[in-house]
Length: 313
Image 1 (tube, rainbow, N blue to C red):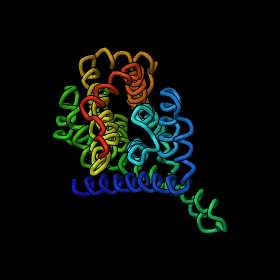
Image 2 (image 1 turned 45 degrees about the vertical axis):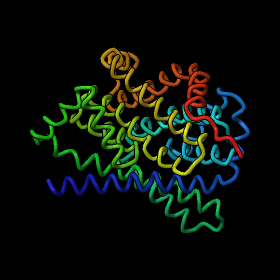
Image 3 (image 1 turned 180 degrees about the vertical axis):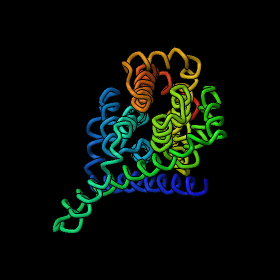
Image 4 (image 1 turned 120 degrees about the vertical axis):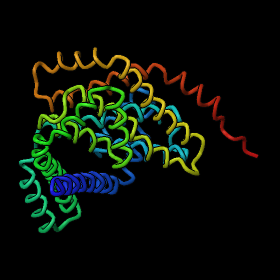
């Protein structure tokens, strides 16, 4: 059992290291271009959502994108309404990673590691070096998932683990577990990734995987709230909107949990459980945005009333 736990921790650390490194590398590589791109194409709510989707897909971290958005709001480059659109878009963009995880690239991770390492070693320009690093980090990310996948295999024979996993089938409890795990590891992608892996190995049911996914959506808001410390009220309102959106969509998801599970099964057309959990993640976030995009004017007025900007003396 100790070996299993250590292997899971090792795989998780590799995954989190790769996600963090990719986010920082892409942030550095994009530089001022990302800021200009974000500010240029956020003239309306629809374009703000599209920016959130695209940038989050590229950076593979909704938290990083929302934190950058908070920084831009704090520096008055973006206003509150523009930021709300980006927050909604980032919630759709982050679902791309779960689709990639479900594609089972783990067994091909040595190829990414080898190509990335060679490019990094022979690089004579910063551009080629960055491409090598990005490929290498993707290899580390997939290898981390592969390590976790192999580590959990023996748990099939552990009765206590199977009994504990069955508890996640109770939607509220499963969501609490997902939120707690995400709060600890600070990555909703990793939490959803683990749910996909456990589902693939037959250790987690579809209902349990979806419940954990719902909780992961709430657990990821903690770092964006931390980013607002000593920030402006506009930045605080952005983080509170992210919290409100995540909380309300989860409540709706829990109320309509079983119809949602049935819907996901139908649109997945008999796909494997790992693909179905990934589809649930994407569908849940898309539906959440479609529901709440129309409420942006209401929440803008509400938060402006609750947290009016301080009058300059």
